[in-house]
Figure 1 (cartoon, one colour):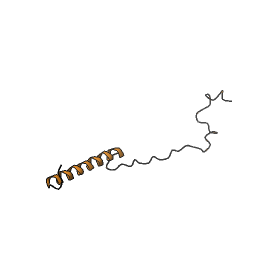
Figure 2 (cartoon, rainbow, N blue to C red):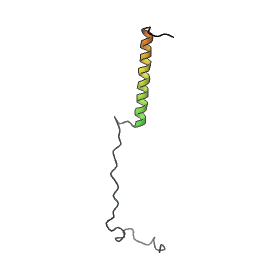
Figure 3 (cartoon, rainbow, N blue to C red):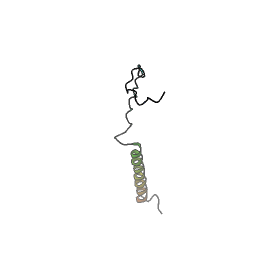
Figure 4 (cartoon, one colour):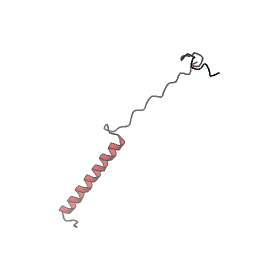
Length: 67
């Protein structure tokens, strides 16, 4: 049964009787400003650190806190 499998033509009209495989269209990647999710995470952490440092330095300058 499977001895002549290599000798069969690639386009067999019997096996392809209306069942053509059509892949689903690829979804576009969800990118915001061209960045991946990891890059956006790093940017947000850097922004958080900047806000923290600026807030801490402003409270030190105005003598609201001291060490």
